[in-house]
Length: 342
Image (cartoon, rainbow, N blue to C red; front, side):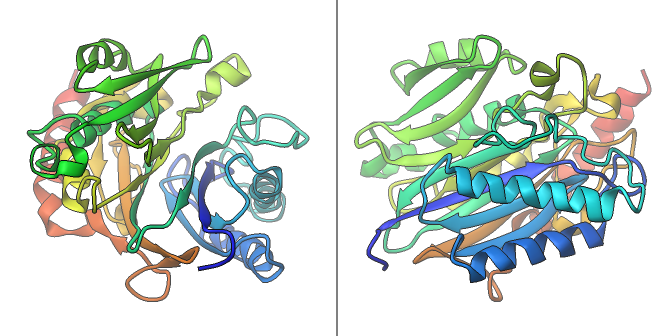
């Protein structure tokens, strides 16, 4: 380990233009983003990175030692999005070029400027597995139900019953995106209060989750609402999040299982319809049918001394590509057909 034992994992995303309408990130956009982050890795700004997409959203996953909300890291992401917009999206006349870059000049933090941000500063455990989630054609409230089931529902997470380290439960930090205020609710004690809030997914959004007994950070999610920044509809918010797993936290399988139920979320065409959240592998992270159904990907890594360890180099485990989620996809398609016939 380095002299600084803490590692920061930053996941910052933005829609900076897509090919075929609101469909998919162009390969040249990812290539340029990788080039930008590789330069930052070589000059020591970041330790490691992984660039991917979910639908039309360009996702920048970075590790570093600079802590959360660091202006240098956020400026790196902002400049990367701007460069991709100017050098790829606009010349290719991609749809919605720079759509999520809602202001002109960087002001120290990309929160409130359009891009979505999920970050956590952690002290690495002996083994540090994480799952990185990214969704398209939906809003941050889409994570409310799965996060409830992962960290508060013993019918989904057996560890809440059989792992002594989890018996005290987890504390949810919920943000009111209208009033820009947060409240901490400890489960199971305040479970009913939590449910009373997070059912209103357009207003109350789970921002982070901590283990109640010691405050260990377990999950962090983006809460950006583009319409509240711009004052008008400018596209769905397409959230992202990071979840730590195992050894006193939910197992990877317990983190993934709620997504086997394609629950209804805000999304679909023009952001004004409801549709099922479909779990897909990276190859199928593209929205077509009525600009949907809303999609979500889940990528598995280990964090080792600030580096991203995957199945090959830093290539992640593409969890939702598994055939175990085939039935969820079929159910999502059936729901989509039914919803769209109205």
